[in-house]
Length: 532
Ligand SMILES: O=P(O)(O)OC[C@H]1O[C@H](O)[C@H](O)[C@@H](O)[C@@H]1O
Image (tube, rainbow, N blue to C red):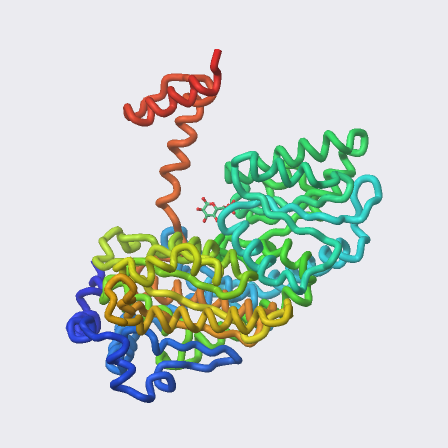
């Protein structure tokens, strides 16, 4: 049994240090150190990361750096980049960094150079994007493609959905990209209602090609297209259905033409797959040049993560500050606050990235982690959130750290908006940190809510790549410290199995062995579905 991270001298030193720091207010910490912003902010590759509003002092960072050393995070990072089987429970590498690498070759410990296939995949994406965007690829009746529907869920949905919204200012003007994920027909049906089957392209994105939601939606979309195309059904299927998957056999069986099959390897984790052909709908929206700029931004962050010393390493600092807040200050939430409408899907995207990767309490050998792991991640685009739940952050009494994200320039230059947006972003971080005490207990804000602020010059494919890669590395570095595998997700299987077992009870009222509560709910639904 390997030693729990909680038993290391570095962890114990942090525990002792936290006892002295916990009673301190951010007001005191700023009063004690006039150089606090310079000391606890970092400018790298055009981004500014300010963590001076975290409840730390210089010793905290030194002790957190010791923790990173003790946990051998650097060794883990090196193994991940090299293609070692860091996903032990599934016996796989996690090489999302290879997907954005410009290196000529990357030979894994298993002796395979993965780069030729990566380059080939990028070229195939480019050819396809060019054909669709130029109008060369046409639907069954000769119409150019005007709408793309990506059918996928989880990692096969959230990344490209988030990035397509983020980069809408760079998108093709005559190509609409839709994302359908939910099993509920209320997701797919209204999308189809507004589309023309002659000019709609479907992408079925599923790593496994066995996911219930995705297959149900893909089958309904296929029925819709085949019914509309009538005698031209074969042409419709050949021209207007693409698949992105690591399971080519199932995609071909579904009826996707081999020329429209975009494969990726099992060493691409679903929630780390934006950089693979899973990003195809995004590449269709912004073009392959734009997509490759995003890869370049991510690669820039990869280099920084690999090379920068801990105290100057943006993702590693994010990871360590997160662990400090969760395990030493007792904050089990993380509020994600992008002050840009374009990043409105970022909180959901980060929910999966963080909570599905690190929402675990056992280490790969089955022993308990012994400390708390992933926080509850949630959030929304400012300034909307200020008029919804920020009240609780200011006066609710819970310790809730925030990540603020904002861009210096906007691509939507309506006069006066952006300055006000930025002022609100900074004001919220300030109010949360310092609070107010005007003598009226009803109006007073206690403050001392920690936050980090990440500033981008502008939201572009490149800076989005940097941003997303930074969060990926944050999550992986935390996993390395906690000693968990961020690349598996065994917890989601149980619900899937139970749903399959319960389906006959809902469909036909069949008796299914279950608990009295679930049986009672199923019976009520059954009665109300068939009033006769
Ligand atoms: O891409 P797929 O194989 O369809 O998987 C889609 C999603 O479903 C699974 O249940 C996992 O929880 C997710 O990690 C995954 O991203």
